[in-house]
Length: 341
Image (cartoon, rainbow, N blue to C red; front, side, top):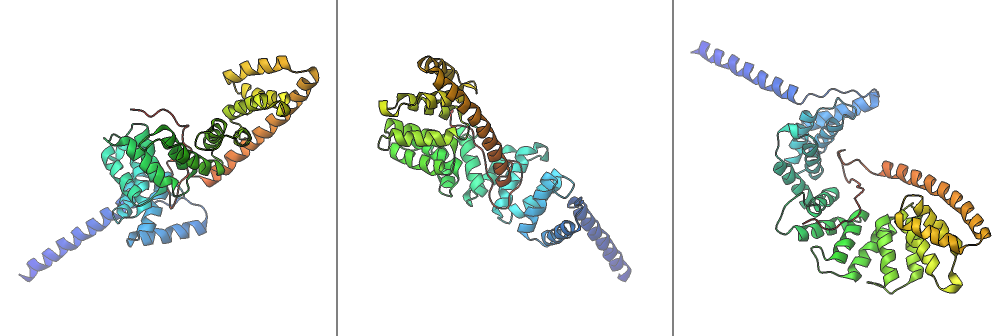
C-alpha cells in the first residue's frame, strides 16, 4: 500500500511539472531590448504579470503584440491580454479587440472581438467608444438601432473631449443621424472640435456662420474659421476663403487675397478653384497679379512647413490604430460622409 501511494505521488509530481512546463512555454517571452534598464523593467513587469497583476499583463501583452522590446508573438500577446481582460481591465479589453481584428489566425470569431470592444466601451475607454461609433456609421456592425448607437457612442467620446468625436457629434446633429436634427447643437459641437484644431469642424463651422444656421450670420466669423482651416492646408477651406474675399462688401474686396487663396486650392487640383482662378485673373491688374504670385510662393512654402510640423507633432501625440494602449489613443477619422444604410 505504501509503495502504491509512493507511485501515485510520483505520477502526480510528474503531471504537475508537465503542467508547469506547458504554462511556462505558453507564456514565454523573449526580451530583445538592448538597454539593461529596459530589460530589468520589463522583467519586473513580467514577474508582476505572472503573479496576476492585470496592469502588468496588459503591458506584457501589448509589448508582445507589437514587438516592443520583445519578439513579436500574437499568440502569446493574446494569452496575456485575455488574462487581464477577463479580470475586467478596460484597456486590455480594447487591446484584445485590436489584436483579434488584426490577427484572425488566433481563431476567435469577429463576434468575440466585438464583445471585447463592447466591454471596453461600456467601461468608458474613449477610443473604444469612437471605434464602435465608426463601425456603426460605416455599416460594418449591424444593429436595428444603428443610427442611434452611432450618435450615442460619438457623444460619449465627445464628452471626454475628443475632437474627432465632437466633430462627428456635430455632424450627427446637422444631418439628424440618430438624434433630432438641431443646428444649434450641431454648431456647439463643431465649435468644440474646431477650437481644438479639427479642420473639418472648422470648415463646417465657417459654413454655419456664412449661412446663419444655428448661429447668427457673420461673414467675419466665417472668414476667421475658413482661414484657420486654410492655414492647415485644406484646399476646400482655401477655396471658400478666396470666395469670401471676392464676394465681401465693396470696401473689403481684396482681389489679391482672393486670388492667392483660390490659387493655393487650385494647386492642389480642386476643380472649382481652377475655374475661379481664371475668372479672378481676368479682373486683376498686372501689379496685383505680380504681388499675388509672390504671396502664393511664400504661403505655399510656409503652409508646407506647417503641415509637416503638424504631422510630426500628431505622430508624437497619437498612437497607431494597431498599437496597444495604456490609457487613450488618438485617431484621424475620415471626413464625414453620407450615412451608409
